[in-house]
Amino acid sequence: MPKAVICENNTDIQKALSDYLKSVGFECLTPSGIEEAISMSNLEDVSLVVVNEKYSKLINEISYLPMYRRRDIILILISSSIPTMDRLSAFALGVNAIVNIKDLNNFPAFFKRAYNEYQKNYKIFRELFVK
Image (cartoon, rainbow, N blue to C red; front, side, top):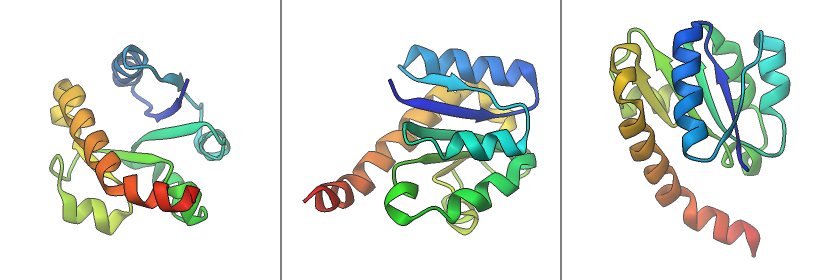
């Protein structure tokens, strides 16, 4: 079962994200702070990290992972200021997708879209890496 690390301080948001991700097959880990989040994100079976802007240090840490490992992690930023699915901002910040906090009620649709784009973009990379 793939693991997801949910880095969100708001317990209602954390629960909603966790409930949805569990329903699509993820085991959800909820760190109590940034150091624990960094430690959890380095686990080999973590394939998804959903991170609030307050955990920007974690985004930086993940960006320094070796490329083969970083490409195994879908990194989604929950933002209060950046529009949902803003690809240019996502690229600049080193995340796979952005979901604005105002759009969290539609997280399942945005997650599916981001996950499908991730699968499409990195399919060839993973195939070549395995060879």
